[in-house]
Image 1 (tube, helix red, strand yellow):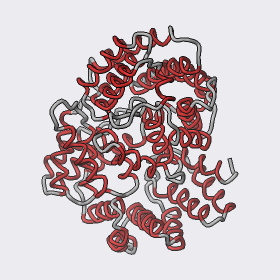
Image 2 (cartoon, rainbow, N blue to C red):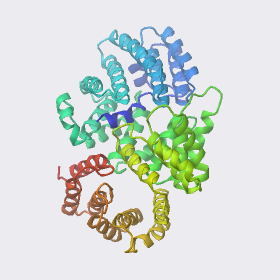
Image 3 (tube, helix red, strand yellow):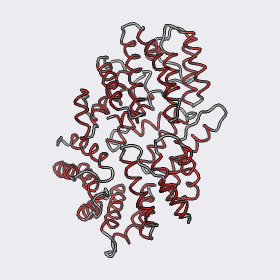
Image 4 (cartoon, helix red, strand yellow):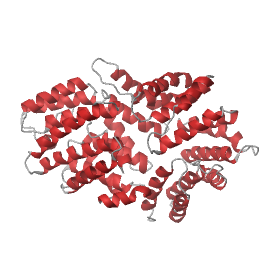
Length: 507
């Protein structure tokens, strides 16, 4: 739950308005802004925040607090700036600065009238704090605060668009709690499903409230990570990003999810636009752009271009986000360009700093790569993976077939080739060929810690579900869940398979 919530927390300070897009009456009422001068300051501050001009945003929100002392809007804006900076840079003393401004916002919000709008601002303040605690992995305190925020959001009427945002975040998060944390969810009283969360976030994104942009982004995150993009969340986010071309934040967020959608070329374009915006005078630091631009280039086999970006991120970033994956891929890029010594140094630095699937998998792969140089088979598998991850599907199939058909290779190598070939066929719409290759990987997965077997069962379920073969889909999803945990990305599979089972009536 906290993992998904932490992904969503970066959205709770996205802007609603730009100078050319005035505040809607609903948003103005939610913020308690009484004067036109106050509205203009809010719009300027939010525009600066969306463009990641942090000092300018702080100035505008400070002026707003003095212009509208009865409103929480200025305090909310200042807290949002601090939240963004703490999240993007993950360094001291930024969290402490956020908590000080969070205390100030909570104090202002507590004095607001007992109206739906006043209660909404109080709920947003608690949600921000809960999610920051989650990012710091202070999970007990985060869970208690998150429970408080969700209770406040549930008490708000659904006719308030911004209430739907908070309710959607809470319900999607509750519905995605992994089994090993289910007891904690019951203890804290979390309830809801991914489907109900997606529904509410979609409705909030289509509304005109203060949180319309953050709702669109949260809608995309939940749809992409838990719902296989079935609700059109990424398309909605694309429209939002296009409406705010000045924002490196939205460009980065869209690019992050384009990478999950195998659209590395488009992701590169968005990330280069974000990098150019961040290079302008007055812009804040947003290190994640380096990491994901490096990954977009890596997936296109541009290893020499990817290496300096990934290495810089691995060397300079002081937080945990994307660090294990970026350091691993910096090592791979170095080795693929002929520098094994640098690669070994980078592999040795990969650590699973968090109990996240991506970190654990990166650490395991780095240990393997450090122990053994890339073989020709390893290189072929990596190029096949990149071809699939950048939507070069026919190239992926051609690249991987020699591995799959070579009986002298290990079951693990052949299972990976079969799995990735199946993914390419599935993306091409050839369900029969995809199922044949998934069956091969599921029957002979090789390494029990590799994901090829259980994830093949899961994706086979997707194909059956799309074909209307509900019974077969349920069987495949249940078989995937029945595989003992411990393999790469097992928590992600569990979350997705349970969501899928709920869709096909098998929960």
